[in-house]
Amino acid sequence: MRLFIVLFFCLSISLSAKEILFIGNSYTAQSRQTLQQLLKAEKCEWKMTFVTKGGFTLAKHLQDSKNIELIKSKKWDAIILQDQSQTPAYGTLRKAYYASLKQIQELCKKDKIPLYLFTSWGRRDGDKKNIKVAPTYEKMQSMLDEAFAEGAKKYKMTPLPTNKLWRAIMEKDQDLGKALYKNDGSHPSSKGAYLVALSLYCTLENLSPDKVSFSGDLSSSEHKLVKSLAQKVFK
Image (cartoon, rainbow, N blue to C red):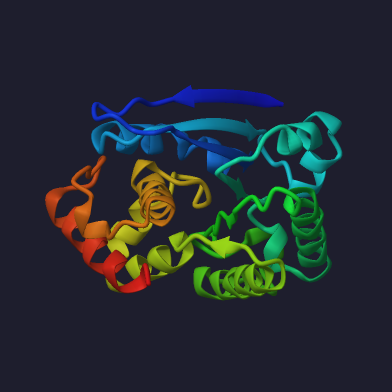
């Protein structure tokens, strides 16, 4: 288990930093640096704890008693939950996803901790390991979207709008859409990580994306497009 604790200080005085717990795997880990950069640029203070391990499902994380105790250790301002990227999409795997959400909901019910779903994206060229059911990005994305919407409703969690913004870009600009991925067609590039960071920041701080000046590795035209699309889907 990797455990990262990062504290960012605002230049302006704030009452207290939000304490946020991230539980996930490589998708979360590979978005962390861009999120840190955005928070620093926007002068926002979050105290973040990351529990990430490549390929891990939420169910695997919950098998570790240390993670259970970490969840229960304080009244977090937010907990961000990311399952393995294929798990929410398919049949029995989706049932395991929902079971994990239910377990975490029960752990957090007493303190009424806000829970957020890290909404991931379809594989760029479809899921090659499940090609019959997810032959394209669009098909896989639709299955993921269905799971996130249902899971959020069933367990009273807030889905981040990353998946909606990712889809909007894939439909609007194919070149930028492809650039959201690393070469493996799965993990986020720095541009893909920007969508994660923007979704998190705007959702947890209740801000409009047009208020965000940080552009990461996006060109000025790409940044303009992303913010324009975010304005439409972050509602």
